[in-house]
Image (tube, rainbow, N blue to C red; front, side, top):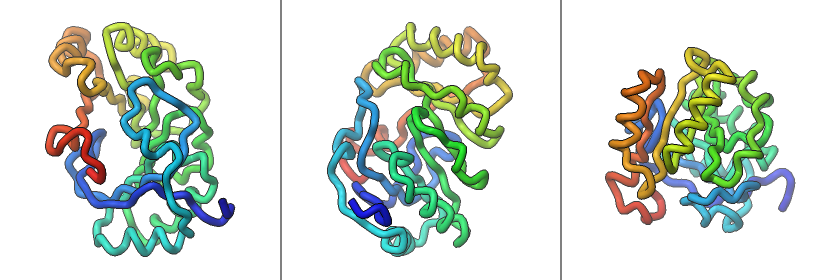
Length: 216
């Protein structure tokens, strides 16, 4: 791949499905390639498939939708160095830019104007040893840390990380049940019982549309 290009899996308009901006119309820019293989991954189509596009071409594709919020996701977008230029260009034209990252690669070069939504991988993912905890130092109170939970073991493990890393009050904490594996009612009760300062994050797009439908 030309190092001046990005490998793009898909670009489409939808509603933001999870996190603090849930329900807001946005443009999704999904980059190809991922360095992790989480057990519950729902975007395997982004592992390899995609086309090469320059930053300018991506910008023109985004601008056709006339929607200000843009969510950069993957795959793992930080695998491609040109994504930094893309996010800077979007900010320069007054887009609201959100970045979803799996938390295994450095976020230190991401501009402060970008809202970062960073995973901390739990044991059920099979990738928890890849968490780059020093990334926490580069997040702010505007950013999100997301735990994707498949069972009670994941939940208890996440509580340990929240305590050890001092996350409550540091940034927004999202607790997201794996679709079809963890009943949201169970997670809700655990959070209520513990008085956890965190938000449950459901995948809105899977509630509105067919969970297996592409481009949503």
